[in-house]
Length: 318
Image (cartoon, rainbow, N blue to C red; front, side, top):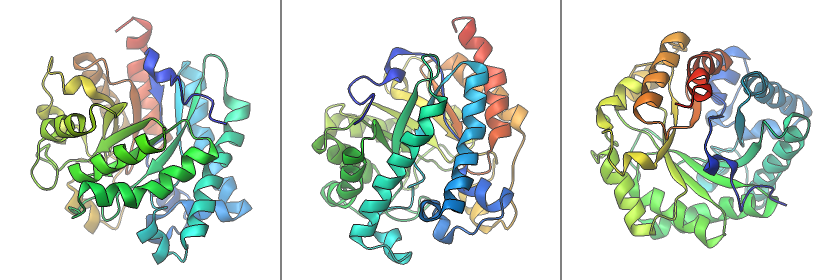
């Protein structure tokens, strides 16, 4: 049974930590093979589950050290029908592994959660296609497409779901509608290009305002992920209502463009301390940004640097 679905603790303020670049960490730092960038396949073996457990626990330890809540994202960014088919998972197998992912996180949460460290179990959804290339679905098709994965998360007891690395307004609308249909809270995380816009040219403002208008603000909040702060800082405007809807950032370690990252054969881990300073600047300008984590190229070092930089602000009431 979902523990926080009806009362998400992040609704009440305070900084919540998330993890970093799961797939890049497991591939480049742990030497694991993740076909099609899919981490969910690790759930099929005890060795794989052990790697996942160690990965999450590195971040949970940082959250405990700094007295923060945590949002536990399932390793299911690729566990949708199109990517699943490429990996040999039919509909039933996908349903089973999406549910197994949530139950795995429930087991993981037990030893770590305290009154000062609430752990929200979040079903992670990825785009139907490539997060760096524009999709062609309309909102109804997107709702139908993502509904089965969201239903699996809801049935397994997830507290909420979040769609990451979306670059299509229609896909975001479809995800929100599907989550509403299954009565589970949902967040949307857009990715942007180096100009701060979605791949088709929509601004973050246009994307967020459109989703909110069409879905009657059914989305819990929005995030930005898989982009470096230098790509979107200038797109944010202090005091604008749409910016107040952005509650989290999961930035890339690298300031390279998506195209450059796609072509790179080595991991660009950037500068963790610099990333921490950029998160501080974002938090000062936009204090509603309370969910802090990373995306491609980030690992526990970046999370530690972000916490070291930002948690004093929380303690000071910033």
